[in-house]
Length: 207
Ligand SMILES: O=C(O)CCC(=O)C(=O)O
Ligand SMILES: [Fe+2]
Image (cartoon, rainbow, N blue to C red; front, side):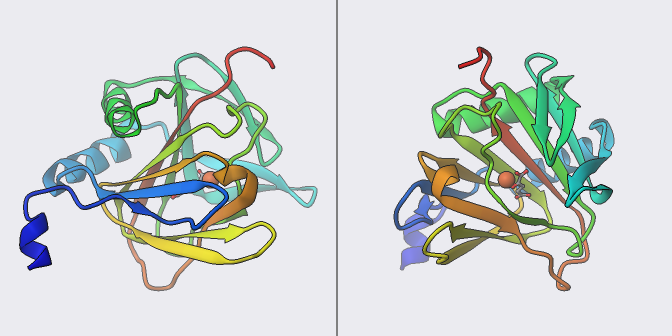
């Protein structure tokens, strides 16, 4: 049986995009008990703050909370607001090492998001801020409530989606951010918290 074949082995890595980039879903890469501990520790140790954005000229404060950590006090601008990175914690360095092992690349920053329930999500966007390495790899770790994550091609508009499980890793690479948008749709079906960490490579020298 297929189940027996994969028993005790990591799940196979799935490619989600048919063209114009690559998104690999590794499935759960952290055993559940350990993922539960990371979730609890991140909830209490991270300096969570409500996010600010300027949308259609209006200054808004999101219900979703965010935090940003990096090698240096990088400045990073998205949604027309500028944030300054905090220094790594030991726990984040542990998770960064785990993401780096799977991606065989290195990261110098991490953006964290805390969604209190399914009413909070993130609308269509690509991670292509000017501070990010062009076509750099982005590793996304999910903890807590399982949520749907969707991709939409910028010209053909076709969509692909995946359920992001507790302790799972998703890796966006190649030309993904140039050709695809992604979103975390809101949903009435989820009533609990989810934490997401995206490890990224910020350009350290101006191009
Ligand atoms: O919460 C997620 O899974 C994705 C968050 C995201 O797309 C971002 O922070 O840019
Ligand atoms: Fe994103």
